[in-house]
Amino acid sequence: MATLEVIIENGIGIAHQLFFLFFMVPYFYLESIYKALFVKVEPKSVKGEIVLITGTGHGMGKLLAIKYAKEGATVVGWDVNEELNKKTIQEIKQMGYQKVYGYKVDVANRENVMSVAEQVKQEIGDVTILINNAGIMPHHSFLEHTEKEIRRIMDINVMGNFWTLQAFLPAMRKNNHGHVVALSSMAGLLGLLNLVPYNASKFAVRGLMEGLHEEFRRYPNNQVKFTTIYPYMVDTGLCTRYEISYPSMSPLLKAEYVVEQIFEAQTKNKRNVSVPADIGFLVKLKTNFWPQSACDYTTDTFKADLLSDLEGQTNGNRG
Ligand SMILES: NC(=O)c1ccc[n+]([C@@H]2O[C@H](COP(=O)([O-])OP(=O)(O)OC[C@H]3O[C@@H](n4cnc5c(N)ncnc54)[C@H](O)[C@@H]3O)[C@@H](O)[C@H]2O)c1
Image (cartoon, rainbow, N blue to C red; front, side):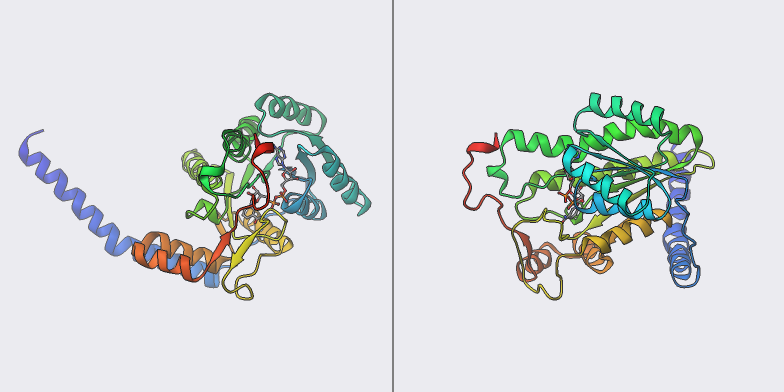
């Protein structure tokens, strides 16, 4: 390219960027504030949808299964723990909702995911809402994590998402109808004590969902939506030992509350939702705008740490 052409192209590029920065960004900010304050978003109905939730044997997965059944969806619950999952399904049926089905699946095992997914398709139909919730969270120092633990965390928390997506996303794309929800965590937004592999897994979930949104957004008239949830600590028992500086200000969240937030996020097509929103906002400020010294100061002063779950245990039975 001749020198003059390069100068002209760069000049146009810079002008375009300045226009975007000083006119378009403020416009988009004002538009979002206006929408948040004055435009009421009607939630989508989930009646008639087939929702597949992983990890329905316990915690938020179980509560999500109950919530979607109550809201009129057909619920397919997957869990590696067959006994707990059967209990969830029975409880929902006893509440009077019969369109609920349980399967034993290890989401870390691709073959298992693919074959049970085929069974679900034959027996129930195409899954239209996929909630990737199953996850594990061993919490201790990185140097104490075994190879087996690290692989298991990545296999369940990350690869499990890939396999269910490979199983169910093609039909959503083909029918141009569907929604994928993934459980990341505040640990998917910033580094936390005793959680290095879990941190990595939840950052990966975030990356996976961001990429998917961007790819699907480019399909004309795309109606397949993606929602990622970033909860603070929840009272399901996953956080076994923790230290919070101001526990009455930032207590563990009630799982029921988080499930309501997830349901609202999905039915209102929200993209990224931190629960609670105020902690999410502070985390984003901290990680994006504060100097490192301020980040370290707040982490030391306003503690919300997970303590090692190995206290009093030997390493022998962890592989
Ligand atoms: N509890 C929290 O503090 C918290 C905070 C942020 C994010 N999260 C995330 O939310 C999700 C749910 O957490 P929870 O607290 O309800 O967990 P939980 O331990 O209460 O329940 C998890 C369920 O997943 C199942 N599961 C585990 N491995 C599986 C596998 N390989 N295949 C299929 N099912 C499997 C378990 O049997 C269990 O029923 C997880 O992804 C977790 O990382 C939890």
